[in-house]
Length: 458
Picture 1 (cartoon, rainbow, N blue to C red):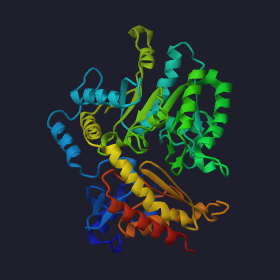
Picture 2 (tube, rainbow, N blue to C red):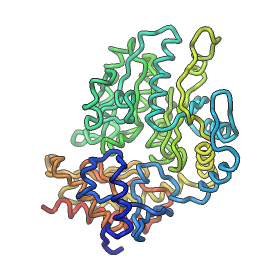
Picture 3 (spheres, helix red, strand yellow):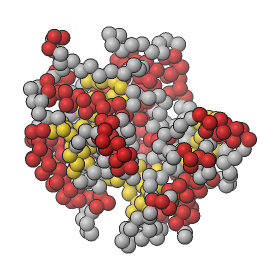
Picture 4 (cartoon, one colour):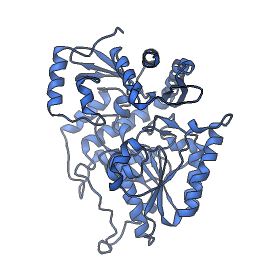
């Protein structure tokens, strides 16, 4: 695909109108005046996005990790159309509908064993808020009100609302709001980037589990739960760890009577090579948070899955005031539930996981040459997530100064070649929709290699 600029009369007019009134997320808005031209999009199809001048961009990041089966997927679009003429929304307190019931039944069939109850919310951060409140409230209802704190991992990210920020640990998002946040305990990340010379991912995970176990042993009487992103800490730069860590954590949470909260918002629904990341450790969490790919990338929806033991702690006579009263206006939205049900049905009727393993292997081969680049310290992969870590000095792993904005250079270069990458700092990653083809993977890897070279050549 030939190089193209981002301009054009239609694009520019829409960009001007946008910047007059719209405040975009996760962005220094001043950048859009010069370094990151706003790109209005007209349509999407498969892995491709198209602007108003007809320029196309391969969506290598699944539009912030939500899109599973491509843009404008006819099956998912059809599910919304069918539901739209029946029931668009209804209060979910005291009323129900088939899309929510069918989605809950389908989820219970496929999630790790023992998770039998679905509490719906609107987005990933909201799911974390629900899980944190549910865990805290559970212990209060069970007569152990002293268990009020949470244990999180270094480099973890669980969302932007205050409770979700509190149990996360990415300084860029969290530090400015520190005075507003509850205090948590933090254990070292099990990130395999920290492996010592000659140490395997498994041995590294076992070693790094030690400090977390020590914190559980010392503080379990005050701890309600431990929260973890299984296998991949995405917002930290796609940091990855061995499944043994999850197994050890499950055993320790059982031993010390602390909830295990699994945040599979980003890594669920096939991203890691299995439908859910927890499967690779053969464990079930006490609370499972799902969102993003739940609706195939179509509509906001999240769910917190729990088992009967947790559910029963809230099941009581009204006058005892033990009910879980958390709510959202759009809880259980029928349109979102309908497209989520259709998404799960694609997993049930098509060999999605098997195809993903073939695509992931091809992606690994296509990206393997990046490891030889003098400024790439590591290429790592878990399923359909692949990341390349850029460094200033490969021998010492000295990072680039963030003010040099190497990731922005990569973003701009790739976009000019028709590829949407959005590096996390100095980490370039691929997390494409599952409908990507081998040829499109080759294009993605090739442009990324060119972008990395262009961004590190000085």
